[in-house]
Image (cartoon, rainbow, N blue to C red; front, side, top):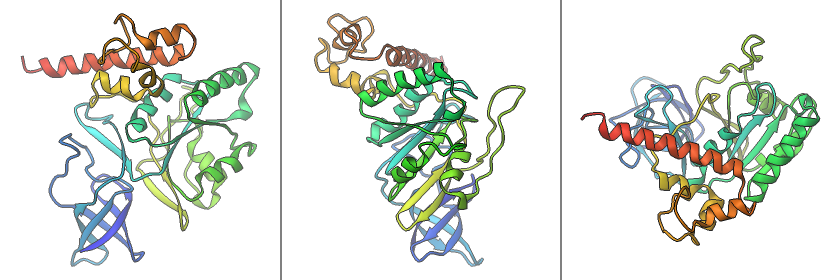
Length: 315
């Protein structure tokens, strides 16, 4: 039995880098689950695995997935009843967004953080394409920077075109395994290429007709930068929904809500209509962002709708 790390996932095959440096194309044996949840991809980039070599040279079979220190999981975009593993065993995540081309969907930031927060994965929120920002866009950036830095996230302003902020981002990636993600069209691959040109990731311009980005990364892949630095590039995300959460999961993983919730009258307060809610009081006193609260309510409504239909689909 040999040990290695999954560095690329292509659906039915997984590229495993053995501890001795050799690359093996592997399939999986049997079915794996994650805490009883259904997965579209039971093995993901970053997984430490044990494999057996097959008779055909360069081929193997994954027999065991070793314990994960963390993982990032999302609702499958193709099968709404299943989950899709994005990566595991990471040190941090970088979320790339932009205010223009395509226009910012601020709610997407909070949805992404809802994937990383349960495992206490540090997140750097990177606002890309600063070279395109006008005065109004910079004002929006400053507001959002204040919101997210206030609750403990790192926020950066960069331009891959003008190399603004790229040195600071490169330094933040050094010595870590970093998941890099973002919505289609935010310049993720271009930004990674500007920091590490040797990767030469494929890029496609935003569609002039729709104003939307196109997927340039098809499968998740881990790229070694040096001995201790790795980047996991992931396909662009169009939307994030949550079929694996309950309302209290959301309440507990909006970190500033959780901080104030200890002072709520009810232990299971959802911070909507309950009396003596410390979170709502904090919002009225401008201690919690109304933007974050609005996104929180939207997510709660969606999750309750999903859970209702799941419970009544067979009736």
